[in-house]
Image 1 (cartoon, rainbow over the protein chains, first blue to last red):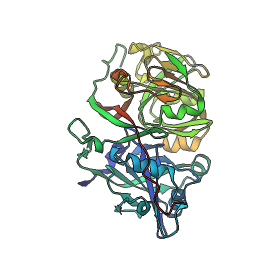
Image 2 (image 1 turned 90 degrees about the vertical axis):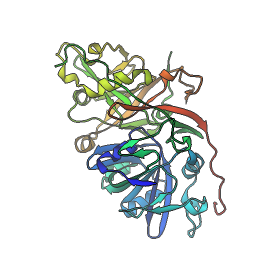
Image 3 (image 1 turned 90 degrees about the horizontal axis):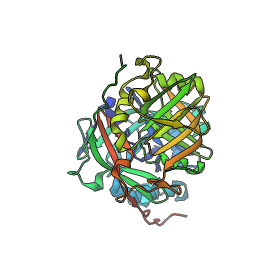
Image 4 (image 1 turned 45 degrees about the horizontal axis):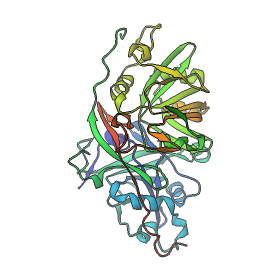
Length: 200
Length: 200
């Protein structure tokens, strides 16, 4: 079940470094692509950073609409994530889109126009903050998170619940290169090293 | 054993989203802090982005020296990572530093002055690219990676070797919040969804 995530806790959806899928829409066209290079950038209002290459069709839609969504895929979606990272929506006929072409369903976001991919475990709806220099020089987009959602089977009450009791197919994906991924592993609690002498 | 990582493959050290420790030195002082908000930003020359809060002592050293290192800690270092994230080097007497205070040893980088933390599984030596607006507005630092290293028990020939045969204590750390971490989990290969009809 999809549940809303409090905005000040939205950073936790990305904090452990999952690969994301960036989706966007404009003028009746929509697209989605994979992006391993993403991170949280602030707590409140929450911000994110993501690298979106100049060659991508998604980028055109992000720049035209001023909006994007970060969809956090799970292990069950590794094959889709790879396909969405390797193929461009630009290579499809105008009447098709990458979702339909791959048989992937989507649903409407609450505060932006970008489509959200079904089957993901978290979603962050973002508005682009206008930083033309970063976009041009580094392909770096900064967005403010205006709504966030998660699959309550693995994220609830502001915390990831991934563990031995959850379906491994729902664990987050962490892309390396080629067809090579990691799934997230053991959750554990640590105590900090004791405060040494000398600390005020 | 530490082994040099070819610069065009340095992005792979961060691609799967590990938490890092940022270290820096200037004028005989050194420090190290935890940073979950980091990502690769380019392949060649490799660049990285990392968020370094204005309140930190590490930031002063990074700004003064124009250099930093990203150290990739492993599960064995969770308690140290938490301590280095929760305590400021500023709260120590001038003759002490966070390494010595916590009993953590370090070694010299090859191309920058920042100390590298022993026991990590990868290290990226970086020079700050001058982007004052990003630093001031977003606490966002962009660095060019000038040298990279990895522990050959878990990263060799440009690939992570983490798997069932490697020591779990050497698996990368993925921080969430509080004392809550994930360790990286299963490595696996995926094949992309078949190319649908309509792809040119």
